[in-house]
Structure formats: C-alpha cells, structure tokens
Length: 281
Image 1 (tube, helix red, strand yellow):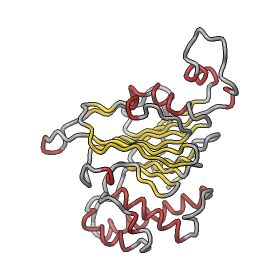
Image 2 (cartoon, one colour):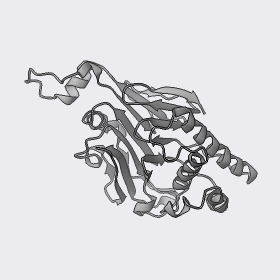
Image 3 (cartoon, one colour):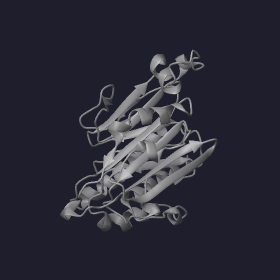
Image 4 (tube, helix red, strand yellow):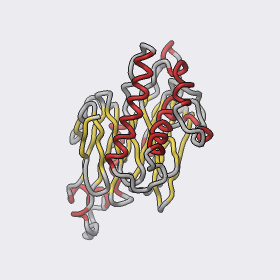
C-alpha cells in the first residue's frame, strides 16, 4: 500500500506536533505484496523551510512498520508533503521515492497508471524538451507531475511563485484529460489514485480514490496543549487564537475521530490561514 500525508499551518512547530499526535492513525505496516513477496517500504517527505525546498527520502526501510515520529524527527516547517510507499512501478531507489520536486513545487501520488509502459513514450512526447532532462526516475507518478508542470509552462506560470489557484486547477484538469484520454484509447482503466501538491502557498489534495480525509485544527485549547504540553507551566502560547493547521492523509479506514472524509472527485485546497475548500475536478 501507499499512504499520503501532509499539512499546512501558520506556525512551523504546529504541523509536526499535529502529525505526531495522529501518528497512531498514520502508521504503515509492511505487508506481503503480490505473490507473497515481503517487499520493504520506502518513504519520503518534502517541505519548505526558511525559503528552501528540502527533501528527506529513504527508498528502502527494512523496519516492519513506519512511524511518523521517526520520519519527521527534528523537522520544523509550516508546509509538508509525505509519502510511504510499497513500490508498484519503479525500483527501490531515491529517484523513484516520493515526493518529487521541481523548484518550489512538491508532488506525491498514490495509485498506478495501468499500462504505463505502453503509454510512457506518448506521455514523454507531451512534454517540452527542456523539462525532460529533469526526470530522474522511472515512475508513472513523476511523469504525471512533469505533465502538470508542462501545462503550467504552456500557460506561462511555471516560473511564478504565486500561481493563482484556478490556474493550478486548470493545469491539473488538463493533465487528467491527457492521461485519461490515452488510457481510454488503449482500453485501459483510468487512474484513480490520490495526490498532494504544494508550491509553498497552497496545499492541494486531489481525491479520486474515496479514501482521502482532512483534519482541521483551530481550537485554541487543543493547539495550546500541543505546543505547550507541560501542564505545570502557567504560560500560554502567544497568539494561539490565530493559529491553525490543516492535515490531509489517505487510506484512513476506518476514519479516526475528528477527521472528515474529503469529497470524492474533487480538489481540496488549504492555505496557512484558510481552508480546506473543495472544488469538483
């Protein structure tokens, strides 16, 4: 299986604390893959930190269970995308480990484009020549990401740091039209996975599987307890009434308390101070 998770918040300590508080629900256990082969997991996180976009990826992890307390140890960031992967396409190497990065953009995805090897060359041909050398791995997810970037380039927004949300949505829709169209021509099933995408300003969830959920933390008492866990202290976190955090995660079944199932077939966007707000794909 694969699990997506990510958050956007308006305080760099808050998101990691929320993930740690939800770690029990977000663990991923190693399971036997098809044919009974006990395949190891891989994981990665990408995050914005002090103006830089950083990656922490481990393509092969022999532990029987991936716990987020180990994955995000020491991180302080206000926007993050993470992914735990039992690979279906692509070898266990860093270049195939989500999330993928291009400039300020980070992207991670679940699911597989059926018949990807059959469609690969046509999908590559849809990209401008200058982007192709940036492809480092051989997964369908990375190629999907670069198709999205190609569409942004066509619309003149690839180099922009503050891309309007409607432009991002239209670029994603154009990418789905291309991939779905090629699948239809080849009589292949359409891709039904989920994805997370960020440029550091928006965190966007793409929900096509039926198992994506969100958690919004904005209660001042809960936030204060997370950031100031020592109950013996009389001090309170400053501006706690203005703090908030939105978290997305996939494959939550059953749904934990306080989480909300995301609308199926939708984009769901959050910023540091607002959201999540959904719109049909």
